Structures are given as structure tokens and as C-alpha cells.
Length: 282
Image (spheres, rainbow, N blue to C red):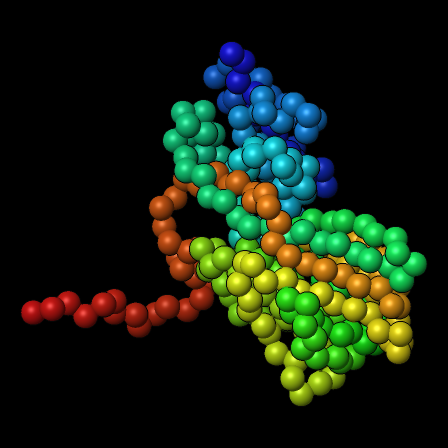
């Protein structure tokens, strides 16, 4: 049976094109068919996807392969690269291990988004990192009514709110002052953006809970839902956005057994000088 691996490349980076040539050569030398276009209908025949770029490229690949179960191996050519498993200098070793099947699968939760307009029209969306409900007019604030599990929590004027997965807690939600959730925390995170309210703090709810955000009629601006920073859905005044955990996770190919703490320290260059480690008995 023919082995097939998809290669997803950031088209705006010259180094990504050079890396793609290296990856393609290595895969073809191992008698693996390399795909550069993806048809979800044939996703079951694709063994894995090698993603060359930063986190944005990995998010694009996750959307491209959504629902197919194809694991993503991210090779970081960007800056932070939280979702990536290998750096550019590790490409050869990473591809060798991928070919040999020497990797584990880590599942990451995703978001299901439903937008309901005042006239009854609906539109669905999806995200791996976050769904950000933001003001459409940057010169105006948006007034949002916040709901958890079908019950109202608060209403306030703000620039918007971010609802994220644990994976997305290191992205937009983090920059807005939200906490970092370890990937094994099965939860949804809610973070207000520049809210004009006393009770406007981050909230963390369990996987069975869900958030709703209504754009009130008093709002100075319409809104939009931005999904993973790349796709958007307009939300009119009087509209409603519901966000809950999606049924299908994204699969990431992992080759390191290092804990998330180590990844966090490395990616954010956190100072750990002076750490002595656990006290040894005796």
C-alpha cells in the first residue's frame, strides 16, 4: 500500500520553500508519495502532515485537515512556535523518525462556534486556539452580555472577549492577561479584552460547559468572531455567539517526552537561574 504524507508550507517564507525541498527529497527516498494539495475526502489515505512554518501555518494545516484524523508534525521556522515539535535544525532527524513511525499522538481539544444573527440566519465555525469576539469598529466599544451554560453572568462594554482551548491559552488569551492552561487540562478559557467593568476577570469552565456572547442592541459597534486569527464571521447587533468544545480533536505528532513545563520555559525564554530542584531525602 502506498504511503502518503502531506507537506504544508508557509508560502510567504523563502526558507520554508527550501525546507520543503529537503523534506520532499527525504520522503521520496523512503518511497513515500508527497502531497502538496489536500482533499478531505481522501484524508484517510494520508499518513501524516509535515507543516513547515510557524504556529499560523500549523493552525492553517489543522483547518485544512479538520475531521480527518491526520496527525500534524510541526517544524518551526517562525519565532515562538508553541505548536511545533521540531526546530529547523532538527528537520532531518524529525523526518527520519516520522518515516519510521517513531512518534506519539497527542490530541488537542477544539472549539465549535455557532453564530446566530437577529434575523435568524446562522453560521458555524471552528477553531483550535481561540474564538475572539471583537468590535467591528475600532473607534467604538462593543457591549457584550456574557452567558455560561445558558445563564447570564455579566454585561459590559469592551474591545471584545477571547474564548480559548488550553492550547490557545498561550496565544491571544495569554497576551490579554489570561492564565496558561497545561494541554492536559480539559477546559475552556474566557478572557475579556479591555472591559469597562468591575467583574471582568478570566473564567475557566469544564469541558461540558459552554459560553454564549450576545452583542446587545445598546452596543456602539457590530462585532465579528475571529477564529484562530485568520477566519472571521460578522455578528450584527442583537446577534449571538455560542462556543463549546467540539467533538473532534486535532492530532499532533510528538517526538519528545519532555513535559510541557520545559516547552514553556524554552519557548518564552523564562529565567530559571537559581533553581536547585527537589530536595533529596537523606
